[in-house]
Image (tube, rainbow, N blue to C red; front, side):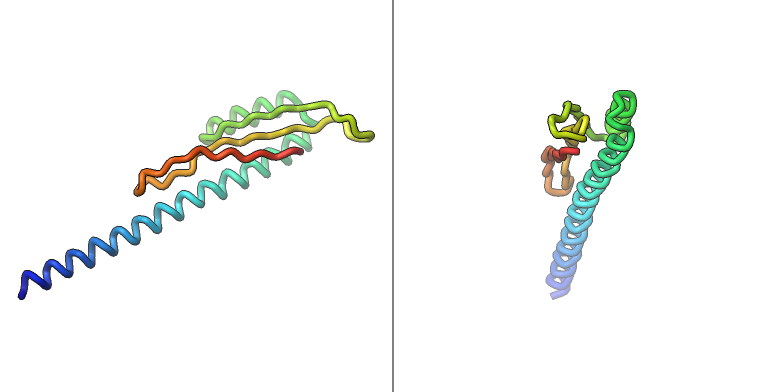
Length: 112
């Protein structure tokens, strides 16, 4: 009878650890995704405010690498009157939930 109680307690603790661990892993994964999205917005604003300056874009690309992202910026001349340039920005990062062994590359694209 005592062994039955110990076994049930062990299974209960193990289940609690798995539930908490998976919750923390999922939360961490989504927080990294939100951070990448916020970074994309920040970089977009900096590039537009610099008037698509090549030096600023290069610094943004280097900063992205430092932060664990891959940033691609393709600046194009606009054909629309009053607009000189526009850019397509691609930010790549990994969405990862370590407990489940999930790792998937995500790419966000934005035209500014």
